[in-house]
Amino acid sequence: MGFIGVGGIAQDRHLPSFAHTEGVELTAVQDMNDERARQVASVFDIPYVVKDYTELFKMVDAVTISTPNKFHSEIAVAALDAGVHVLCEKPMAMSTAECEAMIEAANRNDRHLSIGYHYRYTPEAKVAKELMENGEIGDPLVTRVQAMRRRKVPGWGVFTNKDLQGGGSMIDFGCHLLDLALWLLDDPKPVEVIGKTYNRLSKTPGLVNDWGSIDPETFNVDDHVTSYITFENGLSMQFECSWAANIKEDHTTLSISGVDGGMDVYPFELY
Ligand SMILES: NC(=O)c1ccc[n+]([C@@H]2O[C@H](COP(=O)([O-])OP(=O)(O)OC[C@H]3O[C@@H](n4cnc5c(N)ncnc54)[C@H](O)[C@@H]3O)[C@@H](O)[C@H]2O)c1
Image (cartoon, rainbow, N blue to C red; front, top):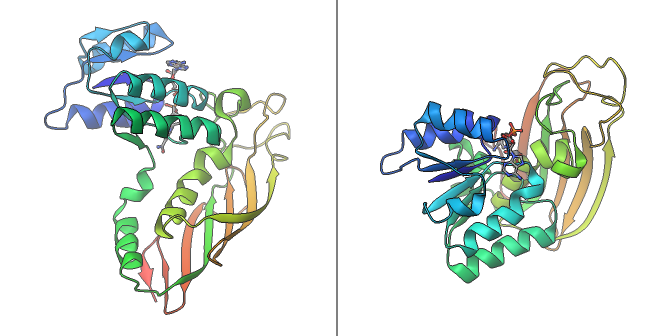
């Protein structure tokens, strides 16, 4: 395996997990910050550090991509065209065109492309998927999604930089629950989306924020998003996500009401 972009998520999750996965060899690492790449290679005992990620493709069967979102598509397409399988962090990319380019590259090279939407692998989500496929709640009608954090804007990395990330709470946190909801509903085709984005709290000087300090001057992404989505098959979804809402406490809600029954995914309940 090779690792491209070895900041927070790569060091906290990918590298420790792959280091303990049977049959996986940690072979090479690349990061725009060469010093960080060297430190990581030393901690995880990785033999090769390269400056240019294309050099890494000759050494490995698969790569993880954990760079800021702006680089996901370009690096994934290059890896797939070099015959290397890809696990790319979420969100997949910054635009539909970038996502489509990644899918086309995976298909034309017959390589695996997987996106880090790990909520799909939680026990609750797996049970929910099985029951949805078995028709346990009948045809789904209305879905409610809330991915809500109270005053927790990530104050590290580049999460509040629109050029590098493409957005804020929606593309960073909301995307996990939206992906999960759409997957459970078997990817219905949206026909209309009404939405509203906010960032007034994060633009307010002196905001009390539990996850580090943020600069209201440079903050240029959303910190709270509300929307209502309707789908071709008659389904509808109320969706809300936030990094910084004045709510009582953080919560993650995904509930689906069907013709014959309903379910909550977190915590899981069928009724
Ligand atoms: N699955 C999850 O729940 C989850 C959690 C956190 C982050 N992420 C995703 O992981 C990605 C990285 O997030 P992070 O928290 O690790 O950020 P980070 O800022 O801690 O790390 C990013 C790393 O990428 C490097 N980098 C920047 N541009 C590069 C380039 N062009 N080529 C190579 N390296 C480059 C930086 O030097 C840094 O080491 C983001 O896409 C983020 O959305 C996913």
